[in-house]
Each structure stands twice: as C-alpha cells, then as structure tokens.
Length: 86
Image (cartoon, rainbow, N blue to C red; front, side, top):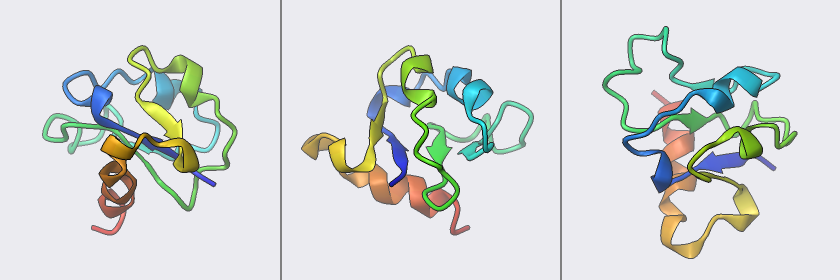
C-alpha cells in the first residue's frame, strides 16, 4: 500500500520527504522542470514501498497511508497517481 501526499503540501512543497525516500518515488524534485509549475509533490503508487520514511519528514503533516487519507482529501489518491500517468 502506498502513501499519498495531500492538501497541506499545496504551497509548501517542502522536499524533506524527497530526501528521505529510499526508492525515489516522490516527484517532482527541485531539479526537475515540473517542480515550479506543480502545486504539490506526488508519490508514485506503484513504486512506493510503504516504508513510511516520508511521514515524519513532512513538516506540514500532508502524507498519509492510502487507507488512512481523511475523507476530505480522498481525491488526492487519484491526483498522486494521475501525475505518473502523463
């Protein structure tokens, strides 16, 4: 089961989660052209290994296990996955 980045990341895009991810499944990174245009970071649902390292690294508490995403932010499950279907 993957983790999901939700609404509190919007406008923050703190990349501490990117730095601790052992499988590089959080994008866009600061060195990618999409970083400036993207409102939020996204976790690849198929590459995430469910390690949870990103959760305590997030300063705005925006990251949840997929089955624990609050109801009001359920749409972010699809949004994270859609980023990788481009």
